[in-house]
Amino acid sequence: MFHPLSINIMNAIVRFKKVLMSRNFKVDRARVHASHNGGIRPRKSQVSNLLLTLSLAILLQGFFVDAFAFEGESPALKEKWQIGVDAIMQPAIEAKRLVGAVVGIITPEGMAVYGYGATKLNGKDVPDGDTVFYIASITKTVTSLVLAQMAENKDLKLTDPVAKFLPQGVTVPHYKGREITLLDLSTHHSGLPLMPSNFDLSNPVKSFKAYDTKMLYDFLSDHKLKYMPGTRYEYSNLGAGLLGHVLSLKSGKTYEDLVTDLVLKPLKMHDTGQSRNKIKNTLVTGYDWDLQKRVPWPDKVILEGAGALYSTAHDMLRYLGANMGFIDSPLGKAMQITHVPKKKAQAKSIGLGWFISDHQGQTLVWHNGDTPSCSSWAGFIKSKNTGVVVLANTSTLFNGIIDDAGLNVVSLLLGRSYKPFIFPEEVKIKSGLLKEYSGEYRSQDAKKTVQIKPQAGGLWVVFSKNESIRFYAASETSFFSKLNLTNLVFKRDNLGTVSRLIFNTYDGDEAEYRRAR
Image 1 (tube, rainbow, N blue to C red):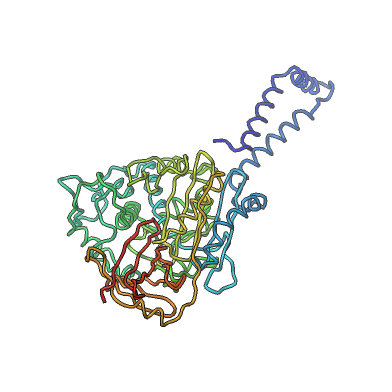
Image 2: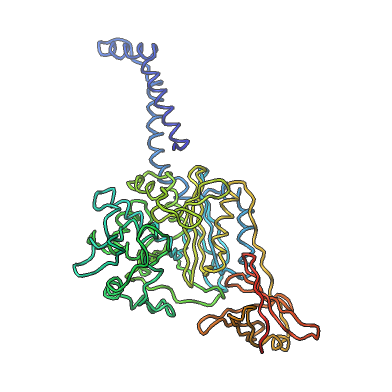
């Protein structure tokens, strides 16, 4: 792929060669020789101009490859897409589904970043291209890039078994002799679960702080695989975290130092890293789906390869630009390897770390990320030289707002249609009416039960001891959830008594529950 400036350089070289071979230039050369013997002085203008053109073009090429759309945003590009990106993002901010977010786009025309909301709830600072967000599981693409680069450096092979890199005495589960490989970890085909069973999911922040190497090794030694590695897709934070761990052991460096040396420094991603105490720019405050402030993940965790990195829109656009070939780097070949589909992953494919799927007839390479305090999405279409990153300081794990926003912006840049967000508005209703809805409801097959509890102008729907979701009033009979965009509607019988409720999910499914008491 050639950038327009590269073509200018090639044209300058061709012109220079033509002049060298031309009759007029041969005459000039003769005059040069004659001048040494006291003859006429040579004409320099033609050669000098071409040399100057060529030199400037080469210098500019070196500058442009590095600075193209990265050292400064393009006002023209930003203005071109401002209305469209605003139409996608503003509804989520106005409906209080997000506290703050940034959208970054990169095309052959340059780079632009759009900021929305605030870096913290009720704050005045709008996030921008230098604001630091937690990118969560997009970290997995960086971990897999390190894997690909180490394979290119002949430090290891993708097919190497994981056990090869772990200390003696640590047992890695296998299935009928088939061992888990590095490739299996990168493609989520290891057979390992989402998280280890000795990890307390009820308090993940505390658990990440407490989870250490011994606990990881104990889990691996005791775990039994249910199927053969390499045969089935099962998304695994554990697997990606284990991959980062073994790459760290192989290199003799910490995960942070390994990523910094192999990826961040070569790509000049100076505002990306793992340690918050090294962050110079504004770090956003994180919130859950209900806009409640959440404690950020700890810096140092044993499963850091699964999602420990912070970054900015500017750095992430540099990362996407390098993946698309806009920036020459030592990682170019390794990056291309990560984009090649290796396995099926449900309705999509997966390369090394990256998901690959069809989006409106184009091949989209992408990954998302989410924790209880943030969400992220990054993707690109190489055939269209188009990349998008969306970062938010609000969790959208279950409602998919940031994923949809990323896809919508991609569609916008492709000139395709997209489905804009439509959020119901919260209204106030009388507490007496809320009390009428209180009680227990059972599914039609009587296998599921939910409790409805009124609270502060809304309702809590309790599904189990550890699972409850807050619903907000959209009208006197209908309520909505910010968590997963589910709606519920209460129905009355012929006597006017509340007798049932109906859940309508974002995906269009419907479930009816009848009042038990």
